Length: 412
Image (cartoon, rainbow, N blue to C red):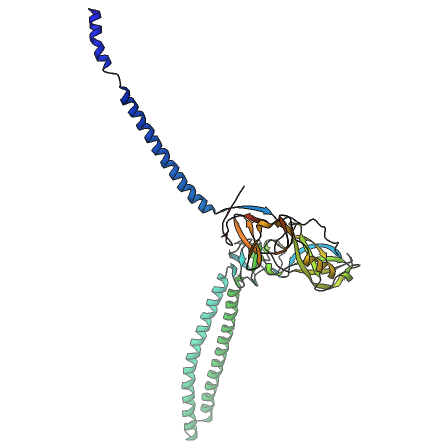
């Protein structure tokens, strides 16, 4: 009986079995769905990658400009000194007062006449209003005196007529004349008081204007010496709680080199002489310069003469108080220097247009087109006589339509 029941259940169990064609069909559907998802992901990634590459700019290869191997001829004279600006001013107020606001900070570029700070001018404003009130009161008194003078002059005329007619005495005439003269004197005194009040108001207005501290010229703020709430005075304060300056402004366009030359060798220096300057911060950068002036006095303690040297071309990297070494060149060395090889670069970096050679310099993700003067070829390299310096990165491989200032991606 049990065996029969088991056999009767067999067809029901067999009905639960999944047929092979249905199982295969489901697997194919899953694979198709996966392929569709993968395709969508790849398309999205390609589209996104296209935008990223476009944003980052074209890819370029760069190489450094290498200094040429021959050693330069020894200089006529060497000296050390510092970069010093001809125009450096510690800006202060013309009057003593409390600082109200300071509008600049270190590194801020300012223009001539720009407001750097303001002082508290409340005392001068009160004084100005008080003086103005006194002037107005005196002006009102003058108007009253002029009315009285007009009446006194009419009385004087009538008194003269009566005296001539023998009705009044000479004493009455003298009294009327005295009143007229006194009123004229009072009016003159009142007008003098008005003039004095106007002068005092002009002083108050000037003091109020002096509470605004302006930049004397265009430059950069290098130090900030005072804060709001502090007292400032054009005179030195012994207590140490009063500032004498608000900030220091330097005219970067006036940067030059100041060196001390031993008086035994000062005969080797002359006006306009060519000089090569090398900043301690950039030892591989030789800056063409020339002698601007020789100070016509010697320091008896050090036995030196001060010489000032101007840069042929200023650069943002040249900062005040930087240490610098200078080499004074002879006329022959100057001629050699002008024709000397500055650096060697790959020929693939040179691009020629309208007979003019140029390269693209790489700076922090952007390129700069720079005209150069080339010399002789050295295998796959070429000499550069002007335009770049050793250490500059030049683009050796990149798009033909590369533009000045374009953002690029450096190939690693």
